Amino acid sequence: MKSQFFSLALASLFGSHAIAQSQLTDIRDLRVVRNGSVLMLDNKPWKAVGANVYWLGLDENVTPPPGSPYYAPLHASYPSPGRITQIMSIINAMGGTMIRSHTLGVSVGNPLSLWPSPNQTNPEAFTPIDWAVYQARVYGLRLMVPLVDNFDYYHGGKYTFLRWAGFNLSRSGDERNPQVQEFYNNPKVVDLFKRYIESLLTHRNPYTNLTYAEDPTIFAIETGNELCGPVWGDMDVPTEWVRDIGRFVKGLAPGKLFVDGTYGVNRTHFGVEEVDIFSNHYYPVSTTKLQRDLEALASVDKPYFAGEYGWLGNAATADASLPAWYREIERNPKVMGDTFWSLFGHNVPDCNTFVEHNDGFTMQYGNPAHAAQIRIIRQHFVKMSQDLSISADAELPQVPCPAPTSLTP
Image (tube, rainbow, N blue to C red):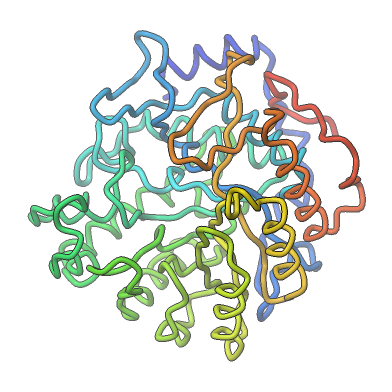
């Protein structure tokens, strides 16, 4: 059952108009598949280019109207349906094909989460996720969904599961504690994590009547975000754990691609058959680091994905560094795509105020201060996707606010 908050928000934003599902085209029912190191859609090569929009399922940046669900200690709230839809319209305007979104999969440990506590599902938390998956489908976009976070943020992560299993750990004080490896090694923790995955993937979306496992809109499932061991960046994610989670995910959702979410390219994972995609993150962008990753993967017939990178580059030289970074990506067919960090729009239904985030990488489409970088990113997306219907050199398209919730073919 839809939450009263979300239902009222939809009614307020879009009136009583029904959302036309008949306008979905056939290609949206097709799966993205892997052919060696190339991704294919409708028997054609397909590139995954877009943005990280981590807040689509659960937000930390907006204080909602009085009476709306809100968990003040962690500043957690559900994003409005208008904010979600506008992001889909923005990605379309930028020539993107997909979104990577943490909180479509990582949502544990606070009262607004999918799992506020072990084995306890919060149906209300599925409401914005259902809407996001549906709106991505309407706009012809695909989604990559991480399952857990290496950190201890408002949306939860591996430390949440560790605490649920009796390990009194937090990233703020225990990051280097060898016990953090119990997330991967402890049977109780692994079983709890698998049950959470199952509750997520078997959920049926009322907008599409598809489970998340069935819906090709979600094209890829990622083990997690920037996973490592007790030492930051050590890539100490056990091979057997990656294999075990991969088999479990593929058993539930055999049509999904499986992404190794280790923070870095771990060569010991090359033999894991279930892994379809390897990835890394870049702060700042570095062609040297990218070349090193691609050299490591040269012996593996699987694609590579630049899952996060700072769109500011080296700040003062952003316009110089981004084109060089993109040229390196565009010239290597093994790179299946990239998603910059991170995208925001207006605080819909307030169409005059941009949402701000505090990490210094807030990209706001429509903000004149970001227009130069957005043009560079858009040109790159169009080159990668080879969408001949888009003129990359044209003026940036206007994105309406509120954005339409259905599209005319």
